[in-house]
Image (tube, rainbow, N blue to C red):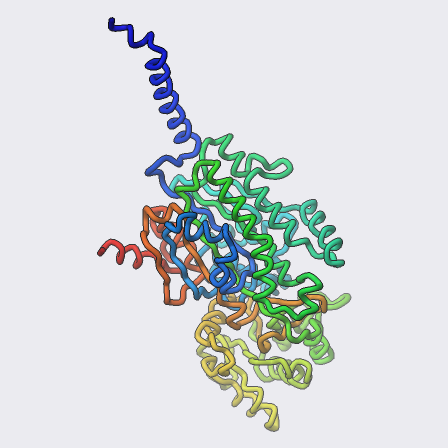
Length: 549
């Protein structure tokens, strides 16, 4: 009688189902770490160059973004930050380095995309085949990244297409083959050798999910298979909207489409389907319910209203200053001028001592350069501000130097005799920036926290909105300015995993910063927020408010 129940097929089947169900639960927990109560996973999706408002004002037409942010049943918690400032000027490389370190460019050492080093006399560019220059600079300066902080707490991270990979356990990068294919497709679709934006983003998502040639083990599928876990922090950098905005299709250019139209078109046609694909893949991996998504951009975009020759400043200074050209090296030159977009940066040597690290003489070196620049109406017409570097405690020419920059009042100066006294009188405090700079406070901070002593130029020309130095007349739009369209982006923190930490839906009305990414991610993962960051954590106050109710 005691064994009769075991002989009953129905009971035997029921017991076997219970055993198999328990076994499968253990397998899921072991392989994905996604059981109820598991720590959240963070997925940062960086839409490179997406303007403010592109997602926010179009969600009804973006079903997959809407599912990610609000939930398929409209039950997700989320945090929306409509005003997020990038590091100013809004240039890609320094903004990326700052975003993943939480520090201003001056502290990361990655001050621009290209700059002149006064100590070594070398021009440094961050664009390289193996994409390791940013990481070497951060390593040399001892600057830790989000991925370093993650590793310290025993967590793991992976990145796809991101240049900042210091500390990441698995990083997928593009190569010559990838960009070669993308450029061929760009030529086929647009008639120019610019990488095809859709191809770039589709391949980036594919690489993140399943890898590409010889890199399966660095993909989500490979990590899951080999290490039986989902990385705690994952970053996908989607570059396509940046490429698409620089070079939109002919039909959009012909009808003079706005940047909002161009970016909304790309977001609907390309990005939204890719978000749907990502959601389905994470659901299949078993980690979607515990995932928190960060949707962010590192800068915005502005339509080019006026192209200015990139060599215009060089031509203006040639003759008065020896420029690096032909057999003249950087160390032998008297002025070095960097390629620029909204800005032009002029480095001047002290021509008396012949040393680059010596402050150039204010009247004998800086004034002649300013005069040459202002004598050119092609430079003067689009110019909005001209700032001149100070050297507190290093230079004494009868004018007190207490800050880092002067604003040069070139309007008054041009209507004067332009003698030495007129030049000195035109040196004004930086806070007298004209009203065209609606982000005046942030522009000042950007100038103060961009450069190191070895990398700071002596003269910086800042153009009006929409006026860019550019040799490529096919380029439709640009970034790198000090104006809101380039410098303010939107930021969402959403996904099903957020609800266990912060409930409800919140709009942060205060202006935040892309520097806040690191403290926010570490906070949501329950890690100690690193000390000494320039970013802050706007989520902590939201959690405290929730706790009160």
